[in-house]
Image (tube, rainbow, N blue to C red; front, side):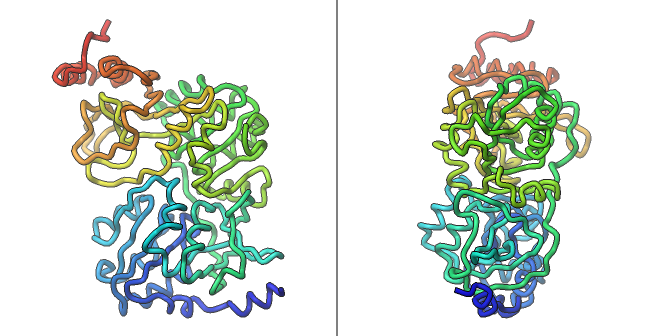
Length: 447
């Protein structure tokens, strides 16, 4: 088969591709850096003549053109698998909604869904000599999307890194309906959030003390995980492995410091395994054609059985807040959705099941409001409407700048006392009073 001839047969303009979209269509927009650009702009130009077009996607890294049309709520609904700031603004405008699901379930959901995509559109790397288009750093669930989509449109971006994998990291031209030569924008960059603070470094130091040589790492995004990564890169640790949902810049720093070999991994030995990557150009350059890195679908990376098969698995994630029962909220501020379930619970459970494994939920003990008021992240009970990401039965280690506590297996009064011991001192007396009212306080932890 002459793949170049087939390429030319399937090549269309962005406007021709956009004409496939009709009212009431379900359209999949890929994931993170794979979100389409040229076809997105072409669809936006058509939307005033369409109604009730449902889009699915997540981890938006720029504002799609379909969001910028007049009165988008009259024409589209954005259904997000994982939300960020762009989508939170769209919620306020009435056309964006979160679809609650454990990220690891996405491939199965698509394969069994009663509403499969009418159209799937996403950016890919250029076709290789064997007729394959690589999904870049977002293997995630895209193969499952393509299995069910009625029409598949790929938008080729010459700047998309080619991310090697074990399976489901690309699609063959024979399965594609339309090919668009994209505008070739630079791959969108995502920073790690604000620079690490003194609190982040204090928390990171407490966590790194628990990590042995040969451990396998999973890091979330944000100042604290980045601080953990920086300390690991500067440490004497060796032979570390990586098995993570999201590949972030911190892993590049750890790897370039010579700390990652993956030689003690029980599975995928010598490979850094991830479901998707998002970060700076440094990260994309590192992932590009790197045989040490393994792009894999999320139902493999986030499967509790995969995680628990790796000895000394260290899972490190953030929280918005938690309560004295040990319920962790990593998704919302009350009823305001912030992000999503993601894979945190999978890694919390999988790490604990790992031989020698540990799961760390880390957060600053307080935050400051826009009006300058100091508030505790440790609450008597979660605020009404808050989402329980990790139930009280699942939390393992809790770490703040005031210490780390292992909460596994503690009775309610023990767990309550341990949690209060790492709260900000200014709020401890008040938390004790609340605990007494809730009958989960047995004795004082004060000297």
